Amino acid sequence: MSKAILLSIHPKWAKKIYSGEKTVEWRKNIPNELFWGMTVYLYETSPVSLVTGYFVLDNPVMVDMNEKPGWLEQIMIRNGCVTEDDLRKYQGKSERIFGWTMRYREKFCNPKTLASFGLVRPPQSWQYVEGI
Image (cartoon, rainbow, N blue to C red):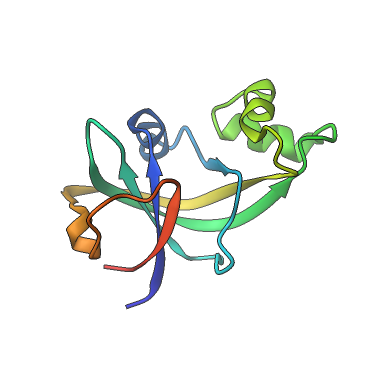
């Protein structure tokens, strides 16, 4: 088994990821052990409350929203299905924000329970798990 990430996400964002519309997931922090090709499982929050699929991490990118985003950051913001203003609000007082870019995604035909990952409750944001 390999180390993976379990990411809590609202169902509306998971739907956009699975459709290919959303290719960047924004988070205020980033795991120490996050690397290209890592599997990131998606735990859809209520009312779904299941692990519905995963994406393969392409490249995590740090963005400082206190500076004017350049053209690459603007593309990433758009690919994250948010506005620059919304991203600034989400960043809040954090010094920077991280875009987790995706290179492949798949929705499970049969969603998994948290117990499949040895968990009894979902992570607030993300946590390490063993891949399945």
